[in-house]
Amino acid sequence: MATQEQKIIFRKMEDILYSYNKYINKIKKDLEYFNNPILLKNYNVEKISGSGFMEVKSDMERIEELKVRLSNDISRHEEILFRIDSALDMVKDHEDYKFIEMKYFKKMTYEDISTELDIHIRTAYRMRNSILSALELHFKTQRLIDF
View (cartoon, one colour):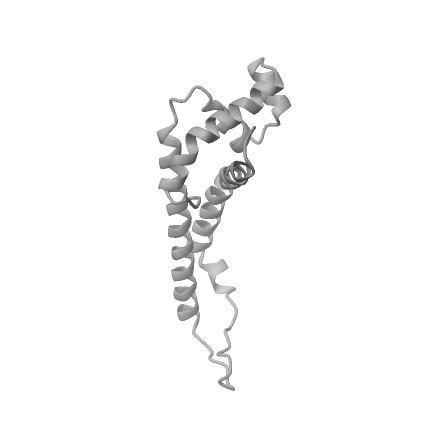
């Protein structure tokens, strides 16, 4: 039986794994936005707070500012994906690695996994515990979760 601390760690790891595809999709969306001048032009006029006036920026200034923000977001998300990939690469030869793709990337239920692999549902839960235990140290070294 896992300790309360272990359950919390596994939950954090699962949240990160479930978010993997969200990061990929966010990067794709930001790149599309970054490369589309029509979308960039819809950027709102900014107010300088407390100054009593509004700074009106040219379309070019607004587009450049937004491109910098999008570029920073893309870089940050790519870094997170790199860290997740690095941690996953360390356990790719683990016997239960397929569980990660099925549960967290394809979002299959435990019932679906047990049916697909022709195993008892309790075995699917054991696979989860086994692969997350193997992955825990690598998530910590990649600073995806706290020590």
